View 1 (cartoon, rainbow, N blue to C red):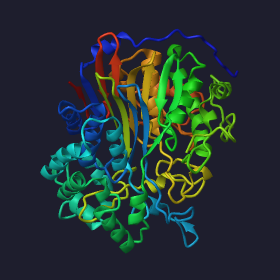
View 2 (cartoon, rainbow, N blue to C red):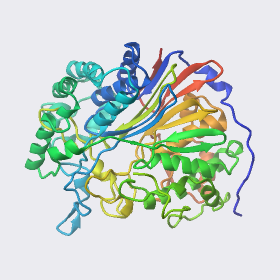
View 3 (cartoon, rainbow, N blue to C red):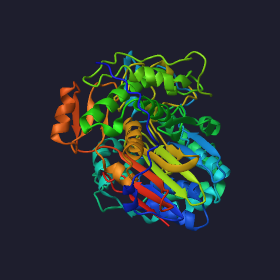
View 4 (cartoon, rainbow, N blue to C red):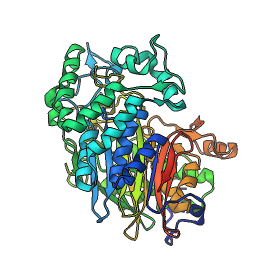
Length: 556
């Protein structure tokens, strides 16, 4: 029987478990690398705030976690400034001016690899412009202040960790195709660096210092852009100096929603994350999640994920090019979708649904996440990426900058899956100057107008589901951030029709979920979620980093 619960929930206060987690009075940060967390702390100690600290961490991750992110990629920032101002800054990559809908159809056939590797895979990077805008609006330090320590680290080198070594081993064959990349990331014999080996990036250090000295114009239209255009011309690419000159970071109106008395401020399109985190939570409000046993909770949340990802595949794209309906986060629309969920079995979702006012009420025109917050009331959720491991695998010679492969986040042809097996429609088709759809989901959560949580994740489309599971763990279960991140995860993205589920769920739970009709894709662990929470009782900032990966949560 179809089931729709209309329970009235009392405001659920974060439970006592957060009191067992380490908190800090002045500042907190959580990132995927200890050196990035230390950079964030150093920026704050130097007189900066949480915004400065987030940018410092982001630039440092471009050195020590470069397989995931860097200035050759893009980012989204959701910021709550100390004065209460909200900012959603879009530093997503843009397609070059010569890009077109059928650019990956060659000799009548789709070349799936061209959007992932090589000269045609990269959009114009936006991270630097976004950092610059964030600092101009809300920071205390300059971009140069934050670039120079990261440059020193790149020149000095650092020992690569297990994750970095594993990613290198998996991509070494493709990196060998590009001499400038191989010279940095591989040994002289072409083999991959191992855990504990020193990675020195002198060209990247020089690039950081040049930007610090000459400003971002050196990158966007100056010497870097000229080198990038020259390499592209020699290797079949289409990006030009003019493309770099024309790039702008955009400030957008955040997506605002609520969940059981808490308020959410999320990234709007071209992020699909904010829209669908809000949409799924809107659906879940109609079910007593906190009282469900594990298998029932997994089932209901999975069904909500399916409905949202079906909508994502059809409706989502760059709002400057495609009409993305605001009705996707409408509470009444969520009620209609919730009514489709059957508690006793899987419900087929053959296609997207149609939100209200879809024709006119629209949004205006491999990854890492980090969260920072300070006692003055500055909160930052920052997602940045170059897409899959080592992006396009291309380093522009003499610069040390690894370029993204975000062009694969477009629907290279409508209905054709990308590297994450996500499908898209015309709304996310390639077009010049367009920004590809992203799953990045930087999110801030508030209670009674006060910031309570900064959260986001890495891991392709699982970013959306990791983020909403973290929020649910906090609100539905009253968990502290570290406890919420330790809970088993699951993910469904509509297509393919399979439920990715961690083996840390009991065998009995997985069997019960399977008996409801779900096809399981069992995983030893996936994702990388970071968060900072405000502990109201202790008046402390509590950072949390995902226990599945190396990283560090710390503060002052």
